[in-house]
Length: 192
Image 1 (cartoon, rainbow, N blue to C red):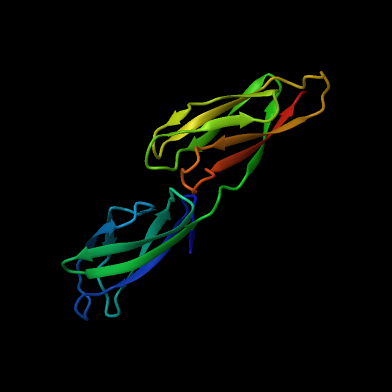
Image 2 (tube, rainbow, N blue to C red):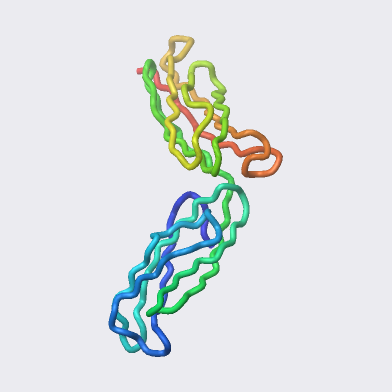
């Protein structure tokens, strides 16, 4: 099982042709019927040995919605034959991240990726007014954008740290049915 987030899992193939292995390098153009799965466009296989040649293929699962994704990976060449591999991935809700430490009077940048295949207008909410956010509302598909979070300092003037949450939300119906997805980033403001 693959989990979302862009991590790759290796796939090992034993490459032979017509029952015997050949001595040339095989080129395998890659195709998949699900855009959530990615790998190199061409896979190279070393010359075959009597029992075949083992080839590792990194497959990346970058889901655009919650739940299960299924696909078929097809590798083929004239000399090496055709290989059809079923792919299965499960995308879970985003896990909260942080805490991100911010000194009073400073800001930090949190990279955020629009995981969808179309532009999306996200909302950015911080629970404590001592923090403010600057980010692009509409984000291009599959692009990383920076969210800048600024901490003004403890409004009481004390050095007690202030905590909050940054919530990045997409509109209802995007990626998870009626509720919309939310990414949570814990923030901790420090006054030196």
